[in-house]
Amino acid sequence: MNRIKQIVDEIRLKNTKPIYFLMGEEAYYIDKISDFIENNILSEEEKGFNQMILYGRDVTVDDIVGNAKRFPMMSEKQVVIVKEAQDLSRSIEKLADYAENPQPSTVLVICYKYKTIDKRKKLAKTIAQTGCLFESKKLYENQVSDWINSLLREKGYQIEPKASHMLVEFLGTNLSKIANELEKLMLIIDNSSVITALHIEQNIGISKDFNNFELRKAIGDKELLKANQIVQYFTQNPKSNPLVMTISLLNAFFTQLLLYHGLKDKGKINVGKMLRINPYFIPEYQRAAKNYPMRKVAQVIARLREADLKSKGVGATNLAQGDILKELLFKIMH
Image (cartoon, rainbow, N blue to C red; front, side, top):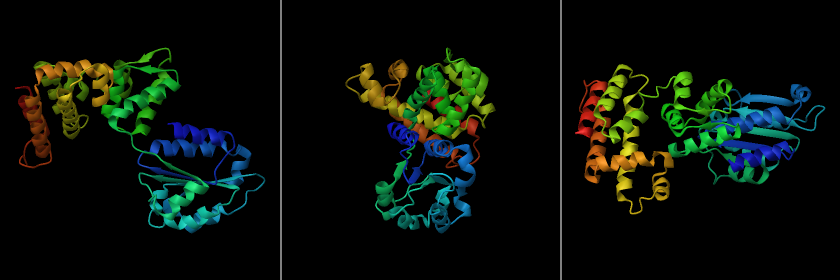
């Protein structure tokens, strides 16, 4: 986040680089920086002659260099943005010669999503010296809730931990999808309000009562009736609740629970740090640890692995996903 702020602040102060090579697995920040450059370097009058959007699938590296070497018309700068540049992965190293001596009146932006170039090779080393080489790394799942809180805080909003967890569970670590859903929420919710699980349910369509978060909690608390109700709901709505995601999240929970059992210091600060969880959820782990001794936790993890194999057709070719989940629940809670 600090690196992104630094890049944006420099552009805002007109201290631009001749090349911005934006790469990495997380497309959100690549788009954010590219969009900021597109919207803020040139005036609307200047953009007509001096701003060009190219797409990797439609051009060659030679085309990009040819456009970058042009001089601006009635403007100090021209902006050339290459989107989906990862389509040029086989030839992108050819850009190294231009990067050694870039046109100072051009701001060349390369959006190289979902991949990275080899930092040991000439292109990366050259851009690091003459321009800006930025890698947008994918956040781990346990980091996304903090990212959501930070994004909302900038806009004057707050969000309940459960609501944040529901978003991560439903949308995964795709920051663009999460940001889009939060933008929708902020249009209809006053920023004096705290975003709750009910807001998520009413406006995004994620059930606050029948989701993997609630299933995990019911299993951890040994609430057999509630767990069965959620599993039945999942069985009736398999597209909205894929088995592979449920198994993955339960496996993460019981793996953390195994780690919790092994901690000598079970104080909240240490538990939150070692398990990488929001302190809000620590009581859930404390209750689950009482219901599932370490030996049982190890057995549950083994059962989860078996269910994962069955879900992929190994040893259970004709078994429905719902039946695998019901069988799994019985083995966990008995």
